[in-house]
Amino acid sequence: MNVLQVLAAIAIVIFVVARQLRGEPLRGKRLILLPAIIAVIGFTSLGKGGRHLTTTDLACLVISAVIAAGIGTAQGALLRLEPRAGVLWARMPAYGLWLWLALVVSRVVMTLVAMALHAPVAGSSAPVLMLLGLNRLGQAAVVTPRALASGVPFAPEKDGRPFDMRGALAGLLGGSGDPSAPGAERPTRQPRPTEYPGPAASNDRSARDLLRDRRRREQR
Image (cartoon, rainbow, N blue to C red; front, top):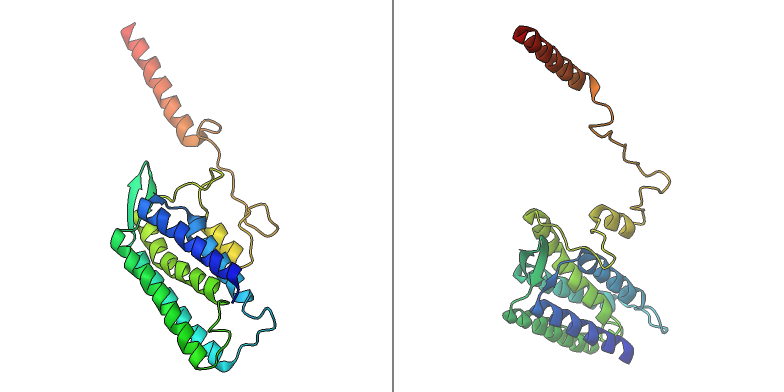
């Protein structure tokens, strides 16, 4: 058993639960990117240390992943979203702790099942981070459409910048969300209204001048 992986998973769960119960600004990177990073790190660690995945391991891991992601979607549906100071806030009601308990119990049960079926990788602590990341991604799959449908923007990131959904998805897919990157479409500069008034504005101004001159002549 990898003690560091277990301690890291416990620390992440305590951190997430505490913030959810207290309520926090909904930030896109923490909602989408961080769970994806955790899931990838957990997945890449499955084959380390000389471990070899068997067919039974894969079957147990797939079942565990479906359960973890399913509980995450339920958590996402339960999460309360509300606007505060012009940005979205998220808060989990206290009874949402039952879903966290269900996640822990499901992992214990699947560990026992995997050990009984002689699936050493699935029965070890190696999948913990991956399953936790998938659980958070399951929540994000439900919360993100709800947040976008609300019309209220995500809270700014720590650096003060707004969350760029397109750039985040491009980063996950291996692309670049930077407009200055080669091949990226550069936004065209729109002229300010005061720079080039255009024919319509000029015609309106000429009509006003003619009307003003006409009134002056009539007054004389």
